[in-house]
Image 1 (cartoon, rainbow, N blue to C red):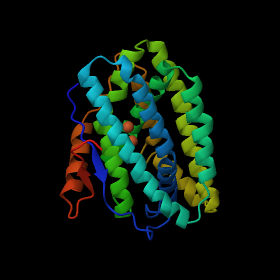
Image 2: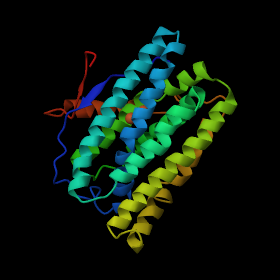
Image 3: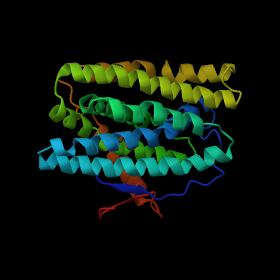
Image 4: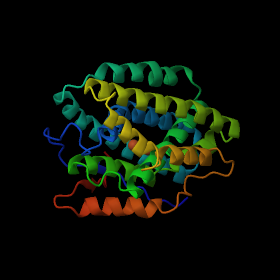
Length: 280
Ligand SMILES: [Fe+2]
Ligand SMILES: [Fe+2]
């Protein structure tokens, strides 16, 4: 696998006057990605702890190097998304108790009780989800009308998820290559990921008193149904993951898509993201 992974820092500001529903006319997608922002830091800290715990089992220098670069990218994602929490706080959302409970009850419990092979399998599957979500949002230009600050944050993250999408899967092949391990990780991760995302997004919409409005359900139907086809596309990507000969590198056009986003962001003046050259 010859992908090139560059650690970058998201240096753009996230001003406090970003609209609460930053994707105009689409409170549902704004809330889904706000839920993603809330869940990212604890989630990605779990990936980092898991990969660090694997390091002593990895003899291949190239894979070790890829894991280290993956860790540096994920650490920056957590930092940037947490900065956006200031906006959610200013908008009066209650989410921190839920976020802390998820970290304690799910991720810290996994650290303590789940075997390493299962933890790596969970990370491998959620990295596939991160990559195909990124691919779908970028390839369908779903965020083109979004507030530019949040669009930059999300698109940078999505592009890097595409860039490093094969690392955790390749690590799983070293730690626990059995198909049953991949299957168990996929079932657990898919259930947890969608339950947490939908639960958190629904909670945000309830706080906005928008959940039971007809227009919100039209937005749900557009996003998951005929408009962006996310339900059908998600099932297709998940089925791909269950193919015995699956490899994350086979996501056609994804690398070019990510490279275009990152090049556009680096070209901006001042740039949205900067490459981090030295180890930090
Ligand atoms: Fe990430
Ligand atoms: Fe990732």
